[in-house]
Image 1 (tube, rainbow over the protein chains, first blue to last red):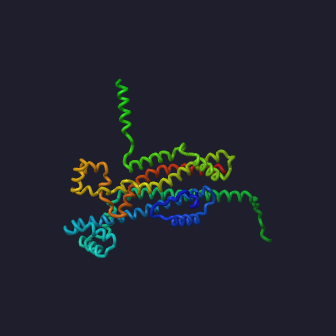
Image 2 (cartoon, chains in turn red, cyan):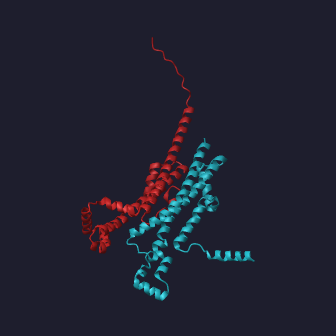
Image 3 (cartoon, one colour):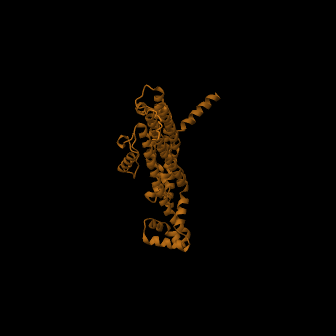
Length: 185
Length: 188
């Protein structure tokens, strides 16, 4: 359950590598050092949810990137002269997205001309994909909560075990007698 | 008799209902079955039962004589197996979404939107592109302009399915953790 080779299938999708997963797994194992089967369960939870949330954060970034290109296309159609808006908005936004200098300069000047900034592009991009972003954020929230819950359970159990060990040790010690030491006359 | 006729008619009509037709619908309904089975204890086959026994014994650290402890360990183990199924299913959701017809078939017949092609289609197949579009909406939609565009559509599809699994996951994790905590009290 705990070491990656025991998993029948690793929870990987396209774009993720076995070596990345294994290295993440090894770091968590090293940091948490599970003591028994119960602790290994919570460690596996921690790894799964952290991995899943990270995957969604990557997807979220990619989604915003796509929509930034769409936002650029929208703004060119909205702000540029009729000819550019009608015939070149799509190709310019693609060039902007692939980092072509001419398109980037053209778009910066267009924004300046209308007193807009990069923030306007981001706002439009987020607006375009808001329903999906909300769904992703909800999932990330749920996975982060479960990841933290696994750590909390682990911490509580270790505290309880430590307290038991302390109580047990104390019970073995004889009651100390208080002896009054008189000062030398 | 009227009742017999009604029964026969009901049977005929129900025979026409053959479930989802599109690939996306089939994939969705396949996941419905799995998600309903996730929390059903009757869904544990022999392999899962063995896994549960193994896990329960290791949770209880071999103290098989303590019945109450073993019961709690078994409850924890059953829910752990459910959680492992959900984990596998989460990965499956991403893979299924990537191969959904709405993604792989997108834009395959986009050329039919061209008026010349639409006319040819009407003359040779006797159906308008509008009618065809109702049956194959994805195929007539504009193709993805890039891989990132396609990935964004996959994310949209997958998050819908993943959201359904979250509830099952929360319930199973809470039941497991409650049982594990109960074990701590019982082993005092």
